[in-house]
Length: 399
Ligand SMILES: *Cc1c(COP(=O)(O)O)cnc(C)c1O
Image (cartoon, rainbow, N blue to C red; front, side):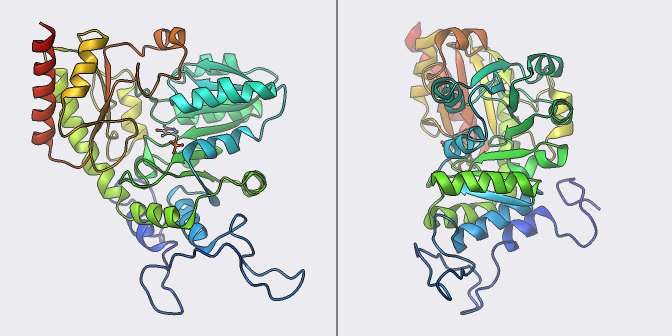
């Protein structure tokens, strides 16, 4: 049996959309409320000294956070999930599995904050990093050495929207006894569930599609193995970067419409990418749904029901004219972040990827003419006209 998005499911199991609404959102037994109450309590009365109830202190566990974690574990096909105060806190928790002398192999098409964490914080503990092209499984295998303890990739890379072969990477990790984690922020569990491909840890910035409305920060991890979950929970509880109850509620609410949002946003993104590809001022469009994308075939196998709502393109222009386009749109807000109902535009070289060293930006194709779009839920035609006007206005200003 498969649900409307084409993912396999076993008999008796409800589909992704149904679970997004019902799992972790059980009726409140005290009142019958169809939306569970938000539990703001920081501490919980215990049955006796040294006897513990289900909850004791909200850093260690909170009912509103547990609800969100149940929903997420179900959506990611995991045994459990953890909710953090931000996406970076979630990645940091993963890196705290490592010790001095350990080595990380990470993708070269990597979120700027993950690059900074690995190169400017983890290095202080004597952990070193090799960046490789995650679309080249042989290069990944070659980069793994005897000290490698973690492979870190993104299901859709950032900002060049590269697509790795998840089962191939999982096989390398398994063979070498290395943990493999992927950042699925751009992919979302509606389009790809990495744990089903043999990945050990799937991470999200819940700030983006899971929340979906640009109104809260959050991060999540989900895993398929109980022992790994216990190790990550120990680190989270010991270091304290948990998600607060109000933000947990907002992410839980966002998850109920995730499937609908990402599918519709992906549809608009594909139409915009096709239009941009024909535009005379556009040198290159990077969108996994275009046949011109280097991993289009793999993307069609990996991402089910849509190619995501991020579009990156390169203008035939220098840094200033590119900046002028980003500053000239009205509907697309000039801002970092992504994944919400409102569309955003940004220049990776000066914004999301400014924390890369200049040499690495050049090496990994983060050129001055690159523009990254996060396509929201506005109508295609309004977004197209907004972009068309901005590109024309900037080239006239430049002429
Ligand atoms: C935003 C983002 C992060 C970091 O998440 P925060 O919630 O901002 O800490 C990590 N990875 C990707 C791909 C992101 O877009």
